Length: 254
Image (cartoon, rainbow, N blue to C red):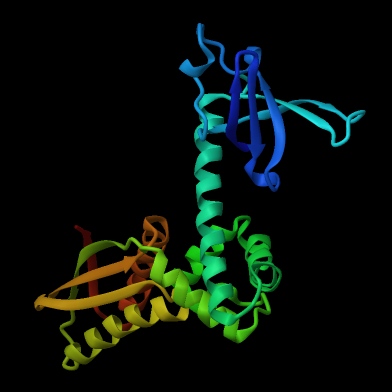
């Protein structure tokens, strides 16, 4: 869990648990770090965010007293948790903006959209990123109110920079048939249709001539793995289609 250091004493520090509505917990001196230090302020400062694990809960006290440890958190766990926490904070900020725009409470936006995105994508921020990339398609089957969804997509695209990548190669297509040009155009047209029929809305395809019989194919999207899979399908299907149309086909990756 993520906690914020509030008060530091010689025997430890009191923190608030950021993911639990600021619940107060205690971090003992012995649970701060495995490395040696003389002064607790060498390793902690007020306002510092730390990643911790709960080690004790005393339910005999009202409210229950919670002790935590930062020493028992590995470096990998710390990095991973902070990344997830920052993403959750960014998602919350976007949902707050949507709520303000629509005159609703942020709790309502979580109920009507946020938790639904989390159920589908395992993380609200991952869902918001998909909305930024694919728009309404990313919310298919989630039954999100149209007005909320439209505003959420608008804000997702405003606050998230979608990085696009591309892969390309050279198609060589020849035909000795009298209507060879028509056959080649048909094959190239089918390549473009393959992308759209697979429902890859965020993938763009462009084919332009380098001078017959060579044509450059460019696929652009947000995920290299998706592009590689689409390219593999295109090559396999185009080889079959070319044989059917009597077109000599080859592909060279660039």
